Image (cartoon, rainbow, N blue to C red; front, side):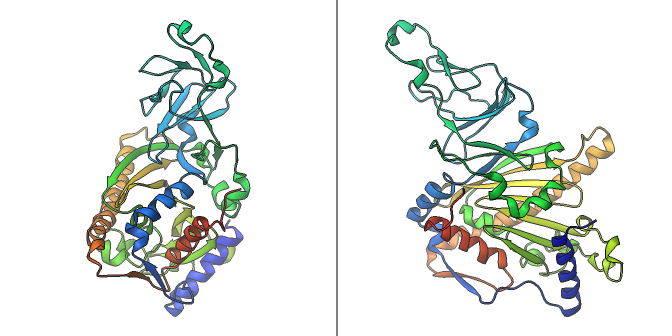
Length: 384
């Protein structure tokens, strides 16, 4: 069975196959190069996009038991996420309230308490300050006021999301992600497991890294010997779920559905779906596994790319391990092709050869992504 949206996507792509057309916007777009190398704009992006909006920091399988924790350091806010003894997810600034050291230095693990390595101030799984050595030096301190600073945290679509700001504002995640619900609910990602998880620092604007996932015009140039042969050349369907985008990229054999009764149609077998989840996440759905990407700025002209590869069941046999390892190696090669080009673009930004980059009419994801970013920076778009 296919959803109503998937049926429309299949109908659209089969029409494109006949006409040679593809999804297009009405006009080309000129995007200022300053969006990629202006430190002031980057600072505004960090303070808005990476503070006011929920960002994926992990998968629920990493926090399935009380005491399990993960840390995340790439938004500019050190984050600690754990599950308490009431099975509630909790997120905190990973910052001791005494002198500011991180209370947990490991990437993941299991703990009953978190203790600062500087002076051993200790916090429980609810972030409450439980004690410190030689407490007589702080005998007038109200410990109830010096727990870890809590952050809004959510479980949705099998992912762990954090809004990296300590104000009281919470986001209605069901409302925020409503346009993607029918697609993601069917994936059952909360029952997947992580096969691989990796982090890549890159010498390029986070925006350049982001844009590599927002169009497929580049596939048969950048990925001539890798991804190109698997997909139709620059024919796909973009679905604008503002501020998110569903990008359905058909496999080369999509024509098999032509002439079949619609009740026999299936979607996932014939598409790679790149879902942009504003502001910096992608959930890339392959025919039998899923990649979850997060792209975050680390400075002017630098970023970090984080990826989780999710599979539906453990790879318990040698055959399964070889299969998934092959997929992992292929996607790493494809990503590296994008990133090498992105770093070369970054190196040329200071030449002033371009005042603007040009987004073609069929690079719809670039248009819509830039519009959503502009709207957020100018206060027209908020997560609520």
